[in-house]
Image (cartoon, rainbow, N blue to C red; front, side):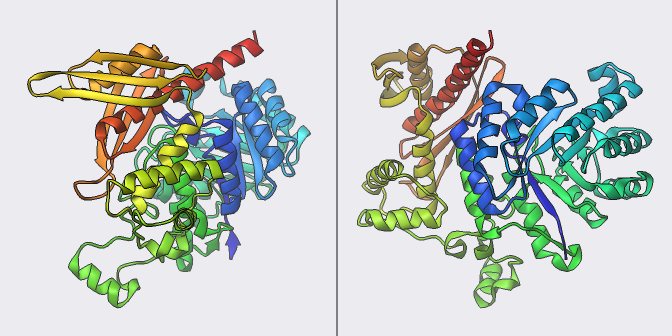
Amino acid sequence: MEKVIIFDTTLRDGEQSPGVALTAIDKMEIAHQLERLGVDIIEAGFPKTSPGDFEAVQAIAREIKGSQIAGLAHANADAVDACWDAVKVGTQPRIHVFLSSSDIHIMHQLAKDKETVLEMARTMVARAAGYCSDVEFSPMDATRSDRSFVYWMLEECIAAGATTVNIPDTVGYAIPEEFAAFIKDIYANVKNIHKARVSVHCHNDLGLAVANSLAAVSVGARQIETCINGIGERAGNAALEEVVMAIKTRGDFMNVETNINTQELYRTSRMVANLTGMSLQSNKAIVGANAFRHQSGIHQDGVLKMRETYEIMDAKDIGWPSGGAEIVLGKVSGRHGFKARLEELGYELTEEELSRAFMAFKELADKKAEIDDRDLEAIVADKLRTQTEIYHLDFVQVSCGDHATPTATVRLIGPDGAIHADAALGTGPVDAVYRAINRIVDIPNELTEFHVKSVTEGIDAQGEVTIRVEGGGRSYLGRGADTDVIVASAKAYMNALNRMLAIDRRQDAEVRANP
């Protein structure tokens, strides 16, 4: 069967998800996991946007050898040059040039005429082709563009040196049958299309990103651009795990295959969820908590007799530990068993990280009789989030009641190791905690979302808090878990504030480096 190239843009489009702020260490960790997953091409970032992004792309291009590394550039000479400087250290560098093609973008965003836009695309693709032999071109917002202009643009860019032409459904506007017809028309109307691979990049605004991607493959597209867990701008991108497993599960219909090692899907999904702070919905296809759970008696009976009665995929093929079943640990479980179970769940921790996680496990085991995989994932995620701490939550105490004014005392350890303590009143215990933290950290922000859920069942369950704060025109996610939901709330708030502080510090450093 023919191969479909999997181009993953988690580190570029995925990082554009509101509230996501990956560090250079986070990006490298994800890049190595994408390499283990078997991703053909990793779009590592947009080098021109900032010195930090340039350095991250360059580091990934230098270190990752099993996957091809691409960088994104708009149709601008400085951007193309910066992209090349970042990716040229790689073994198979790719420059990905994009430029809007729709009338609405050309008129209101670019404020240029079509001939000028066409010349920009042609010239910048040729510039990129002068640097390397692998150049991708994307006519942004192609699905809302005049098709004849898209054909013209693609033909000119292929002639200028583009070896891959990518058709973006930038705003998630297309319907699968319509999108497939568009791809067929590209093959029929672009005279030199045989000289380039056709790719697609679909957004999920109408929930059709995966369907559109598969529809394009059915009519000849041979590269799909994806993100792990479907993250990305607005409603996100086509989810890699859904695209890959659809192709694998329905190979009889699709007649294509990928190079993806599907047993790494679960591990990759959990890593991206933890490092981005974007949790998965329970009913998320392929990797959600309920993907291989059965509650209906009829379903349970059928699966026990023969798995295939109600499961079209084997959880083991996706890398679910114990084939989707959960192993329960307790207070008598040792460090070796704890480490082995974490490895089965897809976590590769350093000795320091393992020690912190094991201590948290033992503390939780004193409060809970049984600790299952969901508890372990919450523990590890909570401890990994502390790696990039600027302020560390050292102590929190709350006094409240139906006839008392909620009062909170907090103690933080600052970046210089100094101890900061303060107290505040609030309308409720969480509000009091957040006011006390704000008195210490003193960074303007607004809490816009607050969500609490139980990690497991039972009265002794951990509570996981997810919040969103806004500051400086950006949105930041924060997550925290604890058997005490007030403590979990404090952890989540500190997680969000630390992300905000990290971004502020990075931007300040970039300003100083480029006065």
